[in-house]
Image (cartoon, rainbow, N blue to C red; front, side, top):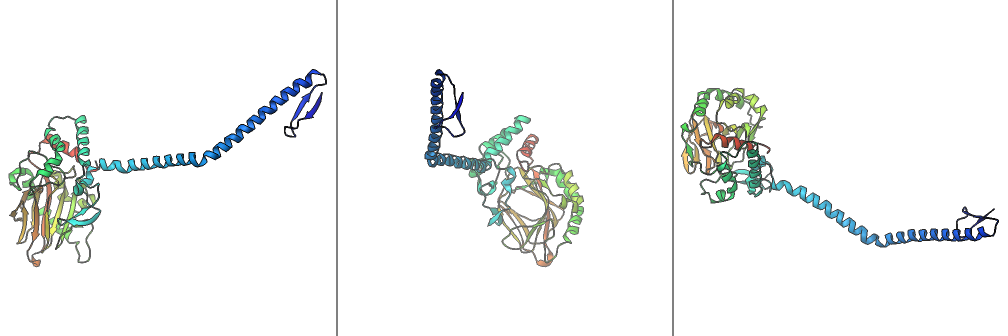
Length: 368
């Protein structure tokens, strides 16, 4: 038996030959077949490499384009989806200010429904109503359901004297001012505690200086003069640092039966209007509330005008009105008389039923 190298293989490969006459022929046939198989494999690999090289510019470009389209689609869907279901809290936010309208700061974001009235709001409100009904009941939801379903028509068809900017609940009695009897318990409670609230304000107001705005106070946009607010509850959100500065007033808010403290339409603050200041005419966001002003300091020549009807504040007395009507306020008194100061509290409209209040708190919960 002899080892003989084959020419068509690499130098480290050998074939086996036998010394008898039959074995050389069989071995040669087998080796030739093996050699052909290796050549075929080599050709196949070479063909595959050439094919890959040939299709590189076409196939790889196609794959790259598809990948780019997929990434763009994912980005587009992720970017657009929140606009359909904007959070309700963003309805009345206008912090990114780029301009003024009606004496107020308004943003230009397409996600701010108060400024753009985009159609995504109704979808969001209806989704929240369905979620509430699944958890609790549809009982008593007829008016809210009707309001959400036809919100666009209600807002567009309202007379110019009353145009709530966000949500209109149908079939509520409409009047610019309300009598004290509308929310008698809370009105009397606020008036009995007039001196307590005034004392809290006077202690708070001592921090004002000529060069800076004290922490917790907010300056609002006015065409002339100055208008400051100090919020305890802002759009349904409690501000603990402010509440700690006026603990007695804050505890008093907790004793009110009809205070809107759990949804974005509820506010409680001290409002200070300097002499010469004017708040330009504007509309509130909804008709489901009554805005209550308790007079703390009321100089002469100060007026509130709602729906074209003027009223004056009185110290220690509450003034109730529907701020979804066009309204304005001004202080034309003398500088030495000092600012006009009121405690502003948002109360439920007396004709909004208890079941509706619970549902509206859920639908318009802050951050929902």
